[in-house]
Amino acid sequence: MKQRSVLSFFDRYLSIWVVLCMAAGILIGKCLPAIPAALGRLEVAHVSLLVAVLIWLMIFPMMLKVDFASIRNVGRKPRGLFVTWGVNWLVKPFTMFAVAWFFFRIAFRAWIPDDLAGDYLAGAVLLGAAPCTAMVFVWSQLTKGDAAYTIVQVATNDIIILFAFAPIVKLLLGVGGVAVPWGTLLASVVLFIVVPLSLGVAVRRAVIRRRGESFFRERFLPKFSPLTMGGLLATLVLVFAFQGSVILENPLHIALIAVPLVAQTFFIFFLSWAVCRRLGLPREITAPAAMIGASNFFELSVAVAVSLFGTSSPVALATVVGVLVEVPVMLTLVNILNHGKHT
Image (cartoon, rainbow, N blue to C red):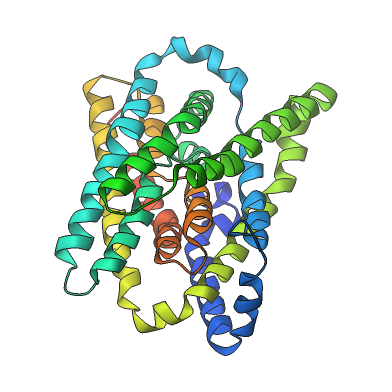
């Protein structure tokens, strides 16, 4: 199947839509500053109500895709899962911190002030601590990965993320000199992972019980895809409306933030690929194992960044840059896998 037939219109041109949302948000922030100012006052416990709604629109449809029943097949081919778990949780968050720290604190020191370097580092950490749980289904299909195995990888990662995300983020942000209260971080995990995941599992089971698996996959689930993309794009407009002045004053920072994110993505991809090859795993297992580690759950990263630091924070900006580079970089990796010799 060709890539164009797998990626939806919005997914295929996600980077273009992100750029358009950046431009729209910056124009709103610059020409109509009263709008973001008014929206910024719609808060409860320092959480923007509008952003909370948009984030739920992003995350809930993705949680519907998680099939926990598939976990019963975990023991069938465990080595690919061990690679996924090890790379995602024992390597990726820490190498992301190291790579981002090197670029923001040393390589780009002449262009990025220390205070912004810490904020951009925090955004990179949030991306590195959240392995992909949605777009990886697309990457797996494009690389002819084992679909059932990919589901198991995603389901088990969602279980791990419930317990590992908050401690890892807290640890690395503490090392990076960014203070984050435990209560706020745990509240974000509950609000943006536990609740939508629980609701998604309940809705999924209810629909399948009443209408069957084929109805759920072919007719029910596709109805939610526009909500995910719409929520993401609207959130980006809002974030860039608050970030407009920062971006106009430091346009170079967008490119500088992208450098460690892209470098980390390629490193994790080739690391996973090399380990799978060393273990002699078949291509249909290697492909999703490599892609799930390289990709990020950027919706969650944006959500937590906005919740913890606000829509106008440089931390949120850094996570949004992750959205900007996601699709072109991952499609590049898809082509590398599809034209490689590893089988």
